[in-house]
Every structure is written in C-alpha cells, then in structure tokens.
Length: 288
Image 1 (tube, rainbow, N blue to C red):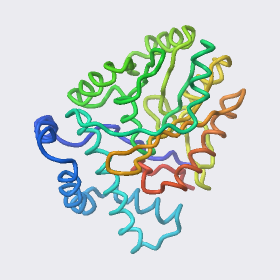
Image 2: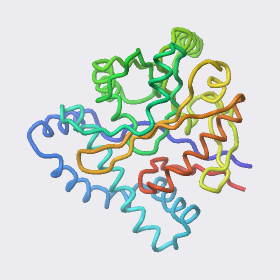
Image 3: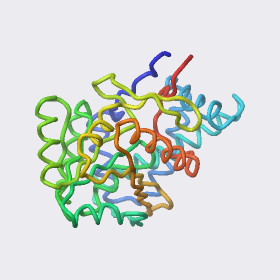
C-alpha cells in the first residue's frame, strides 16, 4: 500500500488579508462574506488543482459520482468549506453563533468523577468553533498543529484561553508527552485530532466510508494508555447561518486498534449524514 498524501495544515492567505477581513467583519453582516466566498471558490476550483482533484476523487470514490458531476459537487463542497472559514474569522471579529449539544452526557460524567476525558476530534465540520463558545467545567488542553501561521495561532489562542482552553503544540515532542500525562493524571480534558498525520508516520489502517484509510496511531495509543479516562469523539456541524450542532459520541475499547475501529465507524456515520462537511482536501484513502 502507498501512504496517502499529507495535508499541510496551514490556512491560506497573507497576514494583512486576514487582518483586513477581521476588521471588515466588525461592520458588515456575515452574509456579505458568504456571497464574496461564493465567487472566490470558483477561482479556487479552477486553480487549486491538488485540492480540487482530492475533492473530486472523494465524490467519485465514496459517493459514486461521475467525473462531470463531481465538479459540481466539489464546487458545493468548497462553498460549504468557505462558509466554515468565514465563520472562524467572524469569531475572531467577535460575532456570536448558537450551539446545540448532542450526547455530551459522557463528558459531564467524566468531569464529575475526576477521571479525565480524551476528545478525539476530526476535520469534519468546524471543530475550532466550539472552543470559542463552549466553556468546559474543567481545564481543557487542545493539541494543535504547531506549523500554522503565527497570526492565526495568536487569534486561536486568544479566543480559546478566554474559555479556559489551552493550546499544546507538537513542536517539542518530550514536552508535549509530559504535558499530556499531566493533563490526564489531573483529571482534565484533552482534545486531539485523530484523522490527520502530523509529524509521526505511525498509523492504523481502518475502513472509513467503505475504503481503507491510514489514521494516525498516536491519539488511539493515548486512549489505550489512560484506561480510566473517558474517550469520546466530537464533531461541530454547521446547520444554519448562525447555528452549529456539537455531536459527542462515546468510544469503548481496550486497545489502540479498538478505539481506531470505533472512531472510524462513527466518522463514517457522520460524513454519510453531512457529506459536504468533510474537510480533508487531500488524498485521504490508501492507493493500491
């Protein structure tokens, strides 16, 4: 098998573009930026060839669309992703969104019993948005990609820390491992993405949406090493202009493979329900 192409993990655009966008969003309605994004994604569709190809392959391989139809679905797909990006920058500008929780009882129980909680996140929906609005009852630490652009990381950190959420980066491997150990031994909350490889190439192969995919092994090993902690996966799904649904599902298992299998099954269920909110725009599935 050949490993899938990795995603760079960086937000497109120059710092001055991002700063200007945040400034404008303080004065103009979010629908205006959705309209602008509808035009921008046409150029993105034409000129962002690797991402367009990956999205078209997703519609052909997973959803059985023809080559011609996959272009139209990819345009709609990019359009949905564009709205997610707009919402993220709108949060930086102070705009508010509504959140509906579904299945959060497992997290609440873990916090009451001081057992710690591992939240396995994914790039389905707009996961970052939950951290800007939800206020956990215990300290939460989010493992994030350290190679993101500095000004984007600063905005994230500012908003997350207002809600008691702290960022851990993977730049210092030993420090990162030590921090995770402290978080879970203290009974706090740890959130880590479980659908993309960053740094380590160690992987677990699992069927996702009916096709074999390579998932990073690290998050599932963490779940195995802390059996007292509650393990859940979380998805933040856009349902309306200002509304999101936060879906939480508990994972059961003993080994890393058990947790990876359960995670892949729930990812398959959620993406089947919300196919346009799959935001892994690279060759995710294994190639023969």
